Image: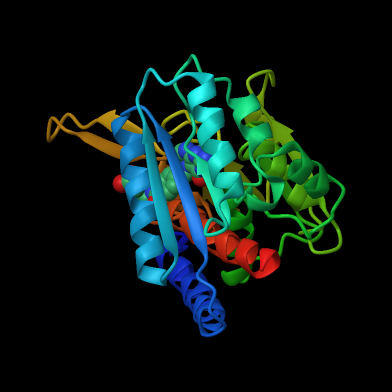
Length: 292
Ligand SMILES: Nc1nc(=O)c2c([nH]1)NC[C@@H]1CN(c3ccc(C(=O)N[C@@H](CCC(=O)O)C(=O)O)cc3)C=[N+]21
């Protein structure tokens, strides 16, 4: 029996409709939310993401300020720009596209962003708030997008076993924190497995909710999934397609195998990706609502 496909595009559309209504309310009061997106260098994948963020801003009536710095930009070039954006009253949210080129210390750049404009929720103040369950800070785009996908699909993680594969600061760690959180969280039992875990499948096979966020194409195979589990694929990997000679987009889950075992599953593309952008837009509007 094939799994139910969780339609990330449709759920993102629902979130975007709510965001649009909030933008209209702000505009009626003379306020236009503004998001600055900073790209350092010319990585093609990063360009695609940055452009789709700017496009979504335009669709929702959010002012977007795209700033592109050359690949050889120095730390002080970046910090000067952050400083300007921090002080720019039209800008409510600042995002620096990750990963930056090697000469840029990403940690220092994130620390320089005004925490009230940190729509990625990467700043240590906002990460700290998240960990202690203070929800007045931002919620990180991809992890929160995953929780909204589950909620809108009628999957309640409370009391269930959620297994997160991957421990990145962007996805695995904050997602684990949000899944285990009681008030305004998911109240799940959480296991995090990673490259230091000897037998990953031993844990994944017990997962009611399995979340793959490791950046390894089709890492999760059918035999690693408990029948009926919800499988959320956070991976975005570009691999060569021998049939067309071009690259194709695959997740961290072997979809063909997983769809036969899981109860519900997100596709790639069309799963978590659109949710990430929808939550980013919502965070930019939240920043505006709070700041002015
Ligand atoms: N400061 C920062 N914040 C981020 O949020 C951030 C970042 N850096 N660096 C890169 C990752 C990646 N990311 C994605 C967003 C949308 C899709 C998305 O919409 N994907 C489409 C497919 C798009 C395609 O064809 O590539 C989908 O899954 O349907 C994917 C990936 C945000 N990131």
